[in-house]
Image 1 (cartoon, rainbow, N blue to C red):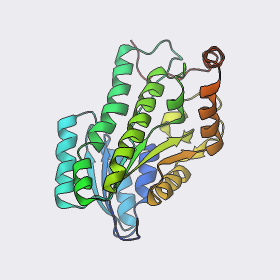
Image 2: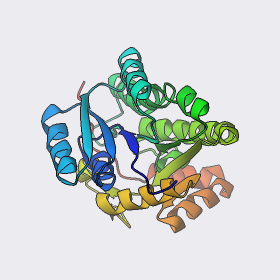
Image 3: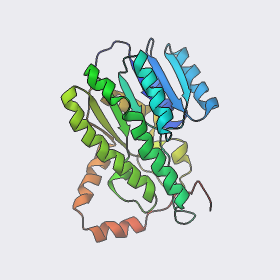
Image 4: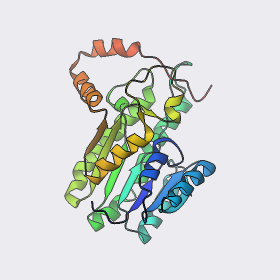
Length: 259
């Protein structure tokens, strides 16, 4: 990718990593389409991006609404050559207050999996036609193991990791690059509720810099910290009963929803 001004779509822009990514891409002349659910927070980050010189369009949308997301993204692509799409919207829950409820599981899967598909699928035909573009899908280190502390979050992030890897292999022939983002702990509102140690936590702004750098260089995997990523890949070779025992001792996260 060159240094020309770009058009970027980012979901989950109203807080956390998504807002940090918006700021990273808010250089003079870049055109940003920022998706979020909170109008107040989204307008705040949009104003900051405009002060940095970016042209910003803030869009209040629910990534789980397939028809609405398709309409928004196809409308953007109709009038712009979209260079980068980052599917960042995501939520987590946990088991500290008991097992995840069916409502929690459905909500997490809907946002973390369907939200990614609703963001990425509408733009793919446009990028194939142009034979250029970058897509980044935010997974997690949790996507390598079915963590007892966050079952549905782990499963959802594992699903989008595999989807990202697979679709990336297909799109490469069309000169469209897909980056699978696999971060460890990032300091965001999502991790602020965790009442347990989170080793090697990284600031959201530093994480956003790493992701932007990886996208710019068409990296297929953007994983940090790297040694944690390599360790988790090695754990696939450890006997399952050992992994299961360790997993059972992990602390839970506060649930975001009560029965």
